[in-house]
Length: 315
Image (cartoon, rainbow, N blue to C red; front, side, top):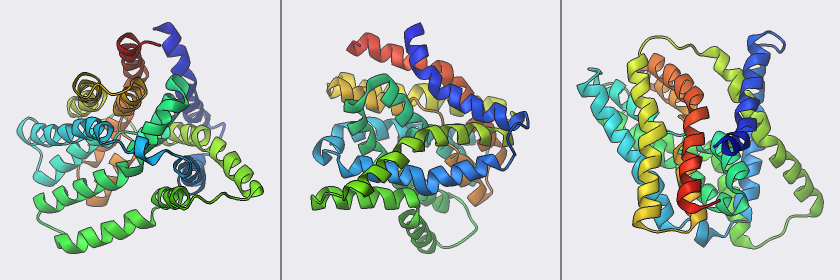
């Protein structure tokens, strides 16, 4: 267990460095925005382009792996909505924002770093297959459900049109689609371009992790702690438990596929849950609290899930 914690500790240490550097005043408050913009708009899209450009697409997009991960994700979505409505007496739109918070795991920025450090390159193939459809699929389901349950705003067709354009114009999606185009074309990039691409790719995850930590200084553990705890339990325990059950016990997938699906499923909610709540002005305080609470708890829970994988699958 200690060896597993030592493996993932550098990932969370980078988050802590970003948090302490900004919280203490050593670095300016605007650092979070600058780092996150660099990561989200440049470095991470290049990382996705680089990774997907050389993926074995048939292996990466294996249906059982995707089913194992997304069955867990959408189970958490439904349970989160039901619990928010029945237990916490949320209004319909607010309940969807709560369900979205339990669904949208930080699979890219945090998940890739932990998969790479804990399992290595073989599991990254399956991880990038999951990540390639993660944001478009979950945002589409979240937006569709929100529009069906709330009573204000645009019509559903208008909302889906705007959402589709936003998703396709997102730098991360552009990186994914460009990587797929390169992969399918069979072309090889000139060496100077490849070297520059690889340099940016190596910077993506460390910069993004420090940016997450810097960004966490903006949030506080406020009210809604029981509800935020419910979101954390769904995200950190139920989602990976379903992914483990399906990929390992039901589908009996190769160890690298199981490791990728379960590790990504065990990640805490990403900052996207706050953005989604802000977009609709629903359950914003809950989203901020759940993001902070689950991210802090994941230091322990991610280590526990890596231990489960080690015991079940071997080192």
